[in-house]
Image 1 (tube, helix red, strand yellow):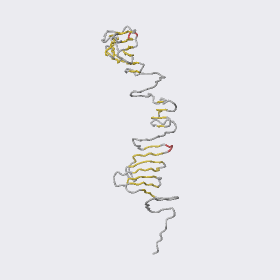
Image 2: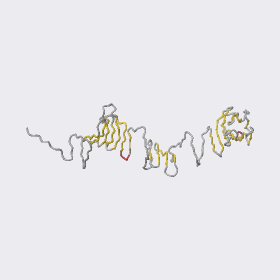
Image 3: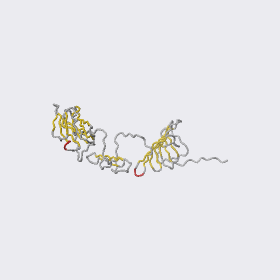
Image 4: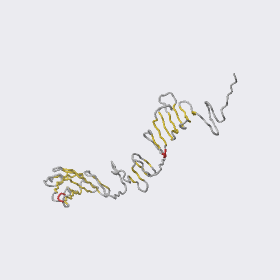
Length: 305
């Protein structure tokens, strides 16, 4: 039997397994096949070189059932960040971000919350995305393909192009410390108590109620004392302007023939629009006109009462 001869590996090529303890410095090209593991114990960092592309892995390799793997790799020509609920051999990706064509980032199952710290810059063309998609660019926020916020000039514009066809809705209070400029109509919803006030302005309230025959409606007033305009169906006979004074008297500033007033009690006159001061900051209107009538009351008062 002849003598065995060991053939050395070519220069620059490492064959078989190698364990390096301490620091390793290499100059030039280093060709590696297979996995390279850095670290020991319950975890490590892996670099995988294969047909699907290179990747870096951190793997929980202990014997627990909750093993996990976090990887940053190239998959199908895309750059992918993902995590799986078990080892490299299987499991379901629970978070994946893929950078595909056109610099788009698509997500299979992105986490519920992302936290940004510091300054985050968003750039790109202010182009509306398709319906069902949202985007944030340098100057605009689009929601469901519609322009929601526009900051291209010195104005902060909401729903600039009317993509939200019903307009902008505010559920609760809105505060304006400066000047409010209305270029169009200032509209109030019907049958709602409206209240406006301000320093040096006084208070204004307005409410509309549809009153059946013999029905009574109550209206909160702008103050204990003030002037009220009562309009029932825009009829001259059922339109009146009346003031309740600090002396407890009534001043009629010119009312229609079908208006009847009381200081604190209902005059309750048939065929009339009956008005009286039912509480300190409330007047009541009883319709005795014989049919359903809509009655609107405007109330004006100084701010200090």
